[in-house]
Length: 471
Image (tube, rainbow, N blue to C red; front, side, top):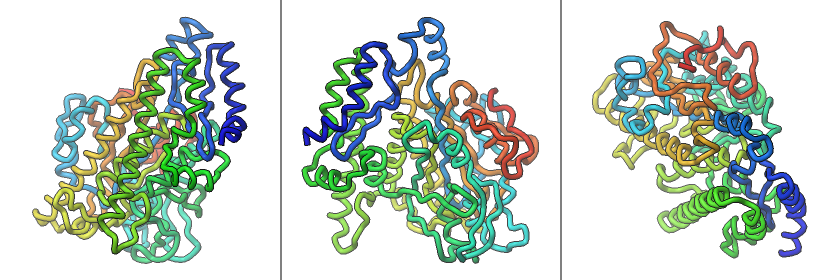
């Protein structure tokens, strides 16, 4: 193994020699070992302050030189709108019942109402609003109604950005989820399951496969570039942390770093170990609590822990600049998951057809609040990471939303949309924005594309860029 370590880290030693001479560290530097490649968080040594002086220090302080990251989080089945949207717009808005968990982050989010995804509407195709809600959510296109192989919708917003900037990171994009995806079969009134289980589309007929298993998502982020499954199996058999096999590279690197960067590395490694431990515990719990049923390895039995692990992995992907574009489906379109952790034992989709029955609506509010609590956790994780003079959240734009407004009415307007983060000082959060009239959700995408260096003139049914994000 030591021979392999020496072989793999030769490129890193060359990088460290360059670093010793210039005082700058490449963002592409990775700590490597047998079957593992650990990307680094953004360090002061990666920023151009050492060589370029005061002007560069000011640029870094302003967020220049630190990349912007973009994420989209999809919630199925709409929301109870009366408990979701605040009462009055502006910076003095009061968080609603369903958004209460965002209180510590009120100044870090934009709540937006009035956005619509018109191509989620039937347009003569009859029922199937859940499938259309997911299929159109990020594509802005109308899904072809078919349960066969001739699926067709459009390139999604995340994949448009990935095509423009994905070559700047190890992973062009990251797709995560909670429920398994299917690419065939009828999942909603004649619409293919591909539409219901995918929001990310590489081409108009190619959905991106999402990862729902925390262990496999972790290996995708930290598995070696040589993709050595035998090495990973050996590491697992010996119960070695991913960090144990890169310890040699880590020690050499830390000798070259200043105190602040050493502290950042230690803090980051602690976070990685903690997530590894939680994944292992989830696997153990799944095996011990359900011996009569084969649970996919690595998927926690606890739904809240599953969500938080996937949010943490997305945070690590952004923190290490492994990718700058991610999507996360907290449930497939039409998901009928139960939420016993908040006392809801009926299926989500079943409840969404509430017919204004108070008991069902109260249970749906509990689901909405639970999902916002997990999203607030993600925001806190991003806020806790320092990057330059700001935080990782300050360098992100994270959109949380649903392709349905009112799940009972199957409406595709007045969508529940939240944007967290400042996107490198190009978004001014801490407000509730109410549009004067219905405007396309795709207008927001155009504005986000600009902030990612992926500008285009139009997307879906866009009729301009969304104004007001800057304040």
